[in-house]
Length: 592
Image 1 (cartoon, rainbow, N blue to C red):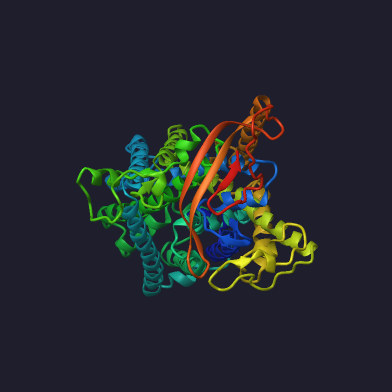
Image 2 (image 1 turned 90 degrees about the horizontal axis):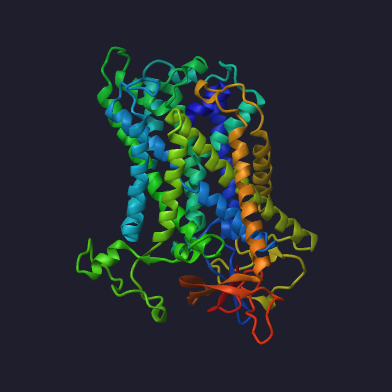
């Protein structure tokens, strides 16, 4: 993305400013997510409210905020995330790097460039990550931790290496980082699109929220670790761009390389000798960058498949129960036959509802298959037509970030802003934490009721500056969702075949697909007078300090349940809360 931001702004210094601004916007969004994620959902038992972390991220927050119409947000989020909640674009970029490592002399415009091999690499890496995701949960988590550390180390090395090399070899840092505009960019449409791309690299912030239920002691460690990680990347990502600009010369849009990282390492490898053979270094760097993308796809496969598992629990898609169900990992199955990669303390017998907490390692196998199918489908749809793989990468990346981060993110932060305004309207101004530092339970009887949603009374975590991050994020995302339709003056040659407004329009139309899905589902329910009843029975552990955690959850889908008011004489209706809150700690029912 450094090349895209520079190409649109025409100024390296303005590019760095937009990277800093993009990081601060993502920080505001993350603070809003922390306020929601550390406060909902709540389970009530004997007059006491318990916050219990649940995986799913903004799916849970949207369903909590927009409780009417029924299932509307479940369908809207579910369809959008199933379509674009993957890294198909990154998989194509992985294929580009691997092809460049094999034939570093072949550019995408050359006849020797093998586009079919790029698609093959993309499908292969998606399949490998999906296989590892269902093979072993424990080892997969350690893989992700290792890749994350390696990726952050690479970012730091590039930043320091670029600044050091540019300082030692002439005056590159001062010359290239001028404020003057050296290109025809910087129109309104250019800046809006550059702001969008400036946010891109920070968008991994949402991944830990998707698996919040798997975080140990989230009340104590989650918020500070998320903010620490975001603070580190907000500092080092712009600094990495400074490192790039200290080494890679810029004289206008024609001088912007297609891939800033490859050009950066190529210049350092040549060290001023334009006749030097750098094919070996190009191969090494291409493999290194492909390795980084591999780690990114692994992490997103882990989180994305578990979000799709949460979507399946709502019974709004075909084969919902199979997708919602966790199954024994391949390693757990191998253990039952006496073969194991390591000594495990988990039982090897199959999961038993009577002992639901005592089970082998579980993985979302059907949800991972769903994740893989749509990722491969996007790779084929975007990669096979006569377009460059780099263009397909930009298109898929844009659609994912626009639909999931900008549009769904706008619905989330704007909904939180509504909850705050609703509390102010009812005389609840907040200003203090409603629970102790450990996040322990607080009896509902001690909390005076004022009316409305009372968000500022029931929330359990207060962000910095309280209201400011939410309203700031809402304003910026609303601006981007509309300004992205402004025509940019800088359009690459390979992107001129498709009108600039098609990509954001597709991002909005995906939401329309979710609305139509919901409408068809409700029409069918109205015609038949039935719905699929969702029965949730979580096993919740409450420790001495009042913290609660879901250790397991039993999901049952009962098709053919009668809608309220449609119960025939002689049948007993099934009473189900419409707001999705729990009635008892051991019984969580939600109609679907």
